[in-house]
Amino acid sequence: MIEASTTEIWIVILGMAAGTFLIRFSFLGLVGDRPLPAWLLRLLRYTPVAVLPAVVAPMLLGAKAETDPLRLFCAAVTIIVGVWTKNVLWAILTGLGLFFGLGAFLG
Amino acid sequence: MDSMISSPAARQFLQGAKDGLPFHIVIWPFAAIFGAIATQAGLNVVEVMGFSILVIAGSAQLAALQLMTENAPTVIVLATALAVNLRMGMYSASITPHLGKASLLTRAFAAYMLYDQPYALSTIKFEKEPDMNLSEKLGYFFGTAIPIGVAWYALTLIGALLGERIPSDIGVDFAVPITFLAVVAPMLKTLAHMASALTSVVLVLVLSFMPYGTGLLVAACVALVVGAQIEVWMEKRKDAA
Image (cartoon, rainbow over all chains, first blue to last red; front, side, top):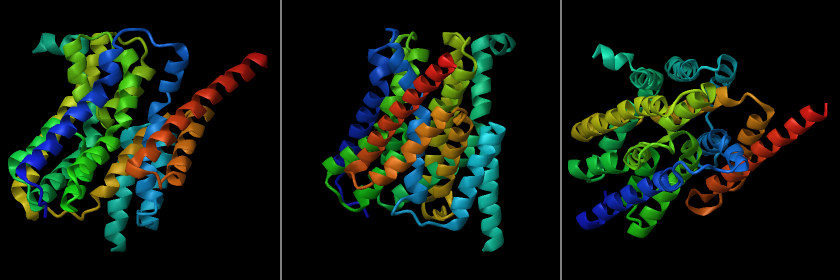
């Protein structure tokens, strides 16, 4: 149970709201339509492939993650289907379908 | 209505909403579970909705909730939850070349909704169709973002009201990495992209000892450089050949 006072809870909510907004607004708000140098644009094009795998990897392979062969198998199939079909929807449906289908089947 | 649909921006909005549909499979149960466990942890409905409406960042909300139930000091809760969201500063930089010409108010609204799914979908779309103009890009971005945001509020509320009648152990924790993998996989189209993704995975695991998820930021920044550098090398090799 959370023992924090109502004030402390609202400090967390409002602090997170303000901080998260400022993080998201940072470049979009301050840089706006000023042109960015070509080398920076080149770097930024790699943002999704550089960030999202780092978010996912600890969930599947980290020390705290339960290394479940079923999950790793479904994750691998999702990547293969995604690379092959270039289609986000097919990759999600295959990965989740396999996970819940095989999960029900294997108990 | 017809004239609205026929405007290019409105068409893009609908396209974005359609492209965002697969993510609803994950967002709905995720939001309901957040609402349910937050209520069970002792937050009232207004506080739970305060999180989902004002912060609107699933993994950071869960991290904060986890630390609050462990009675961590408020400063630590804030620092950890915000560290989880720092990656969105990179999203902000990366989407600026596309949306930077919009008015300040529009940019502020876009920033409020700059979570993983609209960011990832919009980046894929804007790279595939570089001729889109600003209003079409905004239409698409908000088409992906607004329905997901509304679903996030609504299902948080349902979860909060149903409380413990929501089973929280149905494997939704696995649905989140699956959607992220599904977004990344189609982007792995060059050696540079693959090397960047691989660098990111290896480094984040090696740096897992770093506090408050800061290893993720280091891993992501190095991965950016690796991707861009390999792209430069490949171009030089092509020019030389």
